[in-house]
Amino acid sequence: MTQDEGFPVSRLQERYGLGEYQSVINRYKLLGIVPFKKGRQSFITEAQLQALDDLNEWKKANPSAKLSDFPGVLGAEAPGGQMAVIEAESREIERTTGDTEITLTVSELSQLVRSVTAKPIEPLAYLKELERAAAAGWLLTSSEVKALIGVKPSVKGSDRTFVRGSFAFSKIPLKNEEGKPKFKKIGGQTAWRVSKIVE
Image (cartoon, rainbow, N blue to C red):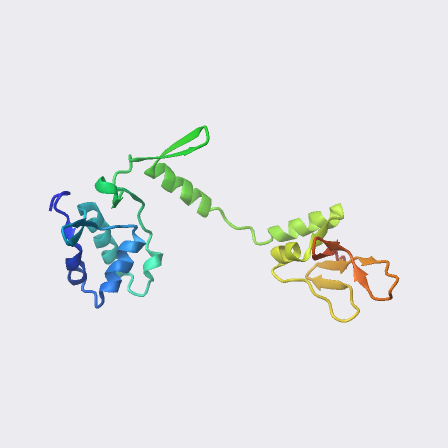
């Protein structure tokens, strides 16, 4: 098969032994493949076929895995404006933002993605942030507290303080002539003062 001939999409279901044609569509959507038309028939390139073959082999080796778990490939424009699979590691990707032009090879881009995603998450980082807020006397909104501790602070009845782990979150009362309790707000949200609980 040459690049010009292409492989008929109508033969993919049989090639991979798939029960439904939708499974074929799901696979080439996952890989970013857009078939090209010749007459009334749709075709894919040799590189795209190879990517589908790789996906099929991976799926056979990992039958319980979801298709979305496939490590995947990067798509790029093929002749005629269609998507193709980049096989050459030396292929460059360019992105222009304002006056800055960034040029990366696929290999460099892959390495960058790996380095970003491989960075370990520090599970106790939120405690450092709470400690900073307590030491600085910062007031946090309910949504900021939730972003740090994972739950929205709430109090029961006449309580003004919510305790979570080693930290207390207190509402700040305001003077109220009507007799109804009022508390400081930041925007439309309750303001919370953070303090560290020392036992």
